[in-house]
Amino acid sequence: MVLLRGAHPAAVRPLMQTLLEGHAPGDPEAPCVRVCFTPHELLDAPVGARVVLVGAEHAPEWLNTHRPVVWERELVLLLWVKDEALELLRRNAPDFLDWVSHRIEVPWFAPEDAMSELRLALTRVKWIAVAGVELVAFAAEGRTEIEASRPYDELVSAMDGGDVLVRGLEHDDQLWRLLIAHAELRWRNRIVLAEPCVLPPLSWVIDARIGDWKEHAHRLDSLGVEHARLIAALTGRGEGVVPLARGLSIDEVHMELLGRVSREQLDGATVACAHDLGLHDVAEALDLRTWSADQITSERIERCLFGGLRSRRALARYVMGVVSRGIVDEQRKHGDEVRRMWPEAVDLALDALFRDDGRALRAWDPATDPSFEHYVALLTRPIIVRNEERGP
Figure 1 (cartoon, rainbow, N blue to C red):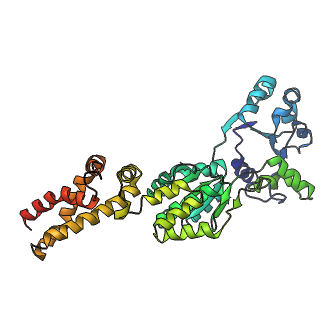
Figure 2 (cartoon, rainbow, N blue to C red; figure 1 turned 180 degrees about the horizontal axis):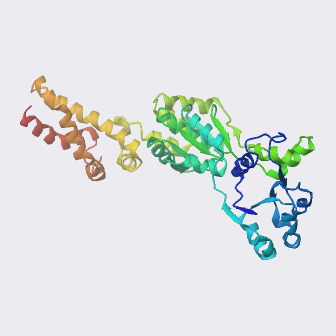
Figure 3 (spheres, rainbow, N blue to C red; figure 1 turned 45 degrees about the horizontal axis):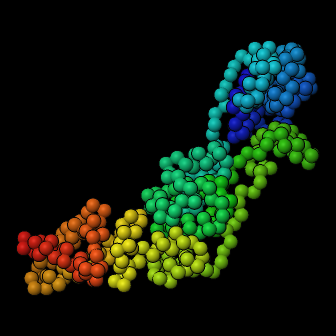
C-alpha cells in the first residue's frame, strides 16, 4: 500500500499516466486501473487492480475494520490524501495505516503543458494572464512582483526594471493605469497578470487551475463517457472552474489618453484627460514629466526630485537645456574648438545641481530671483568658465 501525501491537483494527470503505462483508458493492453471515490468501492475493485483511493477520510472506521479486503483482492492500493485527511486517518484508522509500505510526498508543480505554453507566450506577446497557484508561482520566478493597487510611479519603476508579475488586478481603472505605464515605457518588457479579474485586449490567457476530480468525473459519467474517472484525471485542467476574468471595457477617452502617452505627448491636455478619468496619481506623475519656464515652482521641483526616477529625469532634461543654453552663450566668444568640452561641462553642472537630492535646486527662492533659468545660470557659470579656462 502506497501513501501519496499532498494530493496536489496538478499531479493527478501524471499519476494516472504512470499507472496506465502510457496507454489510453480502455486500451486492452493497459493495466487494470480503478479510481475509488469512497472506501466502500474497494469491495468491487477487480482482483489485482491498481487502485487510487480518493476520499479515504470519509469512512476511516470502515477502512480500519475492512482493511483485509486490500490483500484478499491483491490490490495495489494508492491512498490519495491531503495533509488534513491524513491526520484524521491517523486518529481513526491507525491499523489501516500500519499497512502502508511506501510514503511519497506528491510534488507541488504546475501542469507541464501550462508551463510550456507560458514559455512560448513569453516569446510572443507582451501581456499574459496566468491562473492556478502553481503556475503563478512558476511565472513569478525571476520577475519583480507588484500589486496593481500601488501608486502609478511605482508601477512605472517596476516595469522599467524588467518583466513584472502583477497581483491583485480587480477592476478596469487598475488595468488602465498598467496600460498607461507600459505605454510610457514604449511597451518595453512583459507584463504577467496573476489571476486577474479583468483582461486587456490581445492578452494570452493560460488557465492552469484544476477542477475537482470527483465532480469532473460525475459530469463525464452523466454524459455516458466510458472510463469517466480515468479520463477526468487526464483532462481536469480548466474543467468546472469559474471563468477567469472579463474583458476590459474600452472607450474613446481612455484610448485617447493611452495614445497621447504612447506618442510621448505629455502636455497639459494629457494631464487634464487623466484627471477627468479619475486617474489622479497618473495625472500627477505625467504632470511632472512636462516642464517649461512657466511651470517652475519650488513646490514642483521638490515633488519632482522625490517623485520617482522618471520625474527626476524629466527635470534633469529641462535643467540640461537651461545649462546648455548657458554654455552656448559663454562659448560664443571662445570659438568652435571649445565645443569639445561641452559634454564634460554639462555633466559637471548637472552633478553640482542634483547632488544631495538636488539641494542646490531646492534652494531656489522665487522671491529673491524670480527667474529659475537665471538662478541656474548663476550657479553653473563658475563651473562652465572654469572648464573653459582649462582648455581642450
